[in-house]
Length: 316
Image (tube, rainbow, N blue to C red):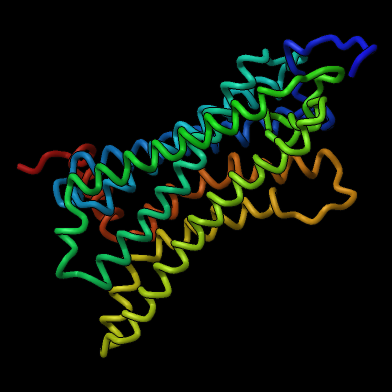
């Protein structure tokens, strides 16, 4: 805008939990720290168990290891910074650090969605085309699918970050969030391009997420149809039990995501928005290893065997 002077923004201030009563912050800090550590340890335990147990060297558990990796990296990209800011009086983040956090959170978040989609496809092939499973889900094919998931997440992360940080940020540098959230940042941008960039980011994110969800739902439509054709109730239960943990994680993942991104507009306070955001950022990754460990009988038994070998006294 000609004739007006703007000071270019070189750092941002993350509001985060600063509006909460000070006496509550240590409680929130301890709660989220414990959930963060459990998320890391739980996913590392899953990865170590799959690595050590030869019976788990199958495509389903290869995808589970990749999912655990993306979950660890997603939480590492966001939660430590949130915890530090929670007890800090200085909550500034540089322009470069903010761009990096957005890139990594988008990359690992979308990689997570792509991997959930591939795991749904894996269950579809195993149940609907069991005779062709070893051909369709070979080691090379699985590695290619995992690589495509990481590549897809990286492309969306890079595109979104470049689009947003191509804008000019001037005036206010206060982000009404505890991370460099894309829509909170877009509110601080100035210039005529802001509206078109916002629309472009929404289209990219929604198209990717809804595309993954549509393919997962489509996979389960065919899976349910195949299960209903199994004559015995025991056979139907046994077949469906292989899908329960994945389906539960998908429901949790998309339910909490919809709470944040699809919540109706209204007089929500900053405090309620912050707490709702933590359900997806902290609580969903916390639940994932619990669900896979408890709902997957084969993995649960492998974890028990691993603990027994390490901690039980050697038999004579």
